[in-house]
Amino acid sequence: MSTQTRQPSRFVRLARACGNHRWRTFFAWLIALVVIQLIAGAVGTKKISSFRLPGTESQRAYDLLAAHFPAAKGDTDQIVFKARNGKLTDPQNKAAIAAALKKVTAAPSVGSVDSPFSPRGQVTKNGVIGVGQINYDKSTNDIDATKLEKVEKAAFTARSGSLEVEHGGPGAEIVRFSNSQGPSEFVGILAAAIVLFITFGSLVAMGLPLIATLLALGTTLGIITLLSHVVDTPDFAAQLASLIGLGVGIDYSLFVVTRYRAEVRNGMDRGRAVELAVDTAGRTVMFAAITVVIALLGLLLLGLSFMQGVALGAATAVLATMFAALTIIPAMIGGSGNFIDGFLRELDNRGGFRFWGTKHRFHLPGRSFRARRGAKRERKRADGAGWKRWSHAVQARPWWAIVGSVTVLVALTIPALSMRLGSSDAGVDPPGSTTRNAYHLIADGFGAGTNGSFLFVAALDKKGDKPAAQQIAAALKNDKDFTFVAPPAVSPDGKVATVTAYPRTGPQDAATTDTLNRVRDKVVPSLEQQTNSRIEVGGFTASNEDFSNVVAGKLPVFVGVVVLFSALLLLVVFRSVVIPIKAALLNLLSIGRRSGSSR
Image (cartoon, rainbow, N blue to C red; front, side, top):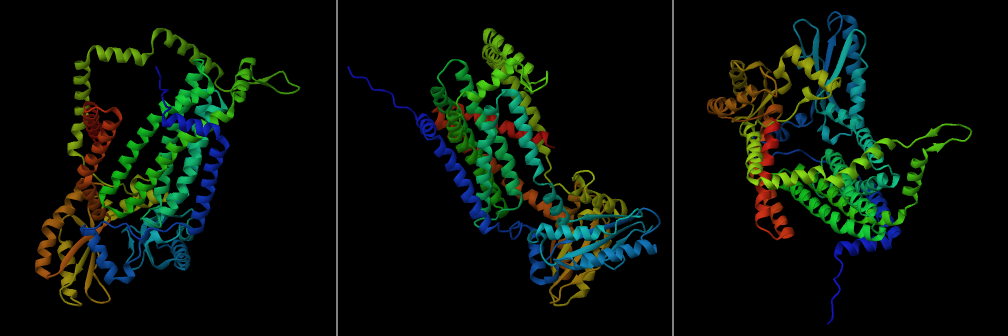
């Protein structure tokens, strides 16, 4: 009777191939990293043209501005001055402000600068706080961060013991963001290395997840640069991909390394342990990565062009770290041998390093911790692990567990029914940052609503119809929810007029959203009828509210598609209908719980 030998799985064959060609595997990744980075460096990053919200009223307002107000197509920043002693009009302070603004005007990409003492500037009644305006010649998204930093440094030359100077606006946010990049990822990698080394007590076990993740992330960042020439890719796409890739990459690699170490500790041959680790933990890694990729690609359903690069970049990071865990880890485990692990264990057992000519030893960190953990692990093996006992308790009383857990999840989901979406402003920037200081100085001097102005853009019925523009401004001045309304401005071609109005409440207040909705639903239709103009409401608050409405409108489709595809994946993996249904219901409850807790 003939017997058929069971063929090894694809995962086992992959582990064998990587182990047999370990150096080829490693250098293939290294060459891919270098080539992709060289190509990316040669072509450079294509800057995103605009953050458009198609179909929204605020976008229609900005489109009118772009078409009829060429001078207003650029962004504006604020330079906020505060007199520590006396007033801004004191000769010393006024001279310092004028000198600094002269330097700002000469900075690259600056179209014009308005002094706090000009008609477009603002000074408080007590003369202590003043706001000047920087008018850029284009969007700050199209200006290099180093140029914006030069603008900020020029403004800060007025700082002294008697004068405080802060920088606010979109350009200031770009400077703050660019200065905050870099160290955070390095600190995260260093912290992960320390924790892994103390936990495993092995340089190999510590280094493998980090090397695999860094190779994958380096390759991903080059791919994101290339993606920017295909789809709109904002600057934060690379940072988001790095954060996601760093987290899941170390996690995926740890799955494989931990399973390998467990099998070797149980006496299995090293080669067989590698194959078994990839065949078991590797499957988990692959299906977990596919689930995450499905969720990330769901962002494409929002219909926002600037989110395409974010979704594709983050999904690329997850896929790259997955392939690294399934290829680099088995290759490097096979190539490491047991020399380093055994050498470190021997040093640990002997008490550490002894420096020549001294009586003291240098101990490996975490020696006592690893000894206690090893003893605890052995006791758990004898008595049964805590999670094993927990699973037995749940299985003994399944209905109590189901009712209890579902009740808790439903209770945590209830707040999501009254959730109010919104976007953060400079008021929640890191303490001490110039953007946050500028935000609060403006709020203290001129009211919280000054940081969230409404921009009314009117397409006039008749060319040069200034009375209609003045009628719109007069109606807004009489509105109880606005503290200040700027004089109207008419475009050079006379077809469009703009009016800026400042609400009483801050950008994040629910009352400001209520004011926006009331103005759009009641005030604007009445003004359109009176002036025969088409009026669109834009500005910071309106843009954020429109963005929230777009996301909220697409959220059911986004969640539904992600949950559906995740359930289909589970259907293929487990070949069961019940498990995907359970998972879908738990996913929906979990999403509701997270939404409720984020209020």
